[in-house]
Image (cartoon, rainbow, N blue to C red):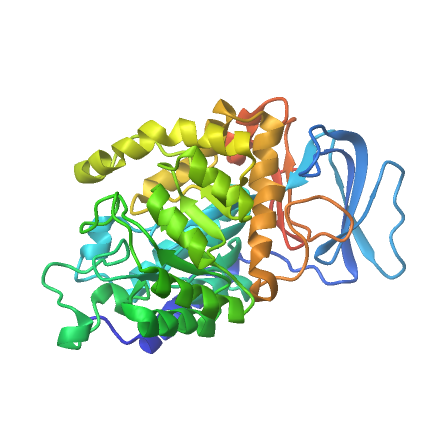
Length: 451
């Protein structure tokens, strides 16, 4: 039997402290700065680099960018790093991750002996490794996340900035209904499912339950709400073609989120599910690989974002049933990417790795798959400044103040120093271990190969 949510949170957080307190970097104060000299600058917006630039970071923000020498402000102690012509660029952003469920296999999740301690170790390690791949910001699209985010933000463990959704919200027999066959409905039998106890999902039916689930996530600090609006490939009960949640139920989530100044994102693939979501006021569609041009155009007209992935047909550890359910999605994926670009949909990019921890090592490689439709500069702009624009939809519910995804004066200092020019050779991004010589988040250096 799993412990209560409060006990789970306490155990989870204590293990972060014990295991990772010694791994945190030196935290630079506002009177300390880092000066990058002689760098080629990719600002996250333009299609070329600016050579022979100097960039001064003071505290956690970019203070000055100049082709001339930079003098430190009075009272600021400077550490100088010679860029030696390497490319300074924004940190990478992945807007669809599951930091807990991407760190655990399905076998581990289903194991009755799974403990909060083991889950904490796995997810903390996954978060640290993600930062070391150059991902300085992520949006967690559903699952237990608040304790992990608290530990990262508090400096107990290294990891990216996290925009948390909290538990996904799903109807009974929806994409977030992870109950085992032996687990009965909470409404009829009075017992929450194991997945609900873990903070993975809320199974919520009817307007009132959807409102409560949405508000519960907001209470814990969700920066946006994740709702299941259609069938999925990683869930047992729902075929891909089904539409989930009535218009009134979906509107309830949107109204509650908007009252808190933020938005609802929905998991959906089909035109029917997405059109209903648009009518309900949803601002972000996750996936959408089965959409037609008419629906994509409707998204443009309503300023709705498409958070899209480039999925592979299968992966080494993928269940055969999941492979079969993905087949139509994979077949139509190229058409959706091209049509979305052609009609001008607001696009964001994420990976959405679930239940296959080894797949996380390929996170950077998946950026290379974008070259089927985008130039290297366009791909890099998508995974930096464009993804940052989508994160900004959280408004006042954003967990962090400041501008991300760009290298400009006043922006937050989330930076990578790359050995080479990724606008000429995007494959540099796929080898962060050798090619990311500096990884900086919030003005703090987590990796330095320039010494």
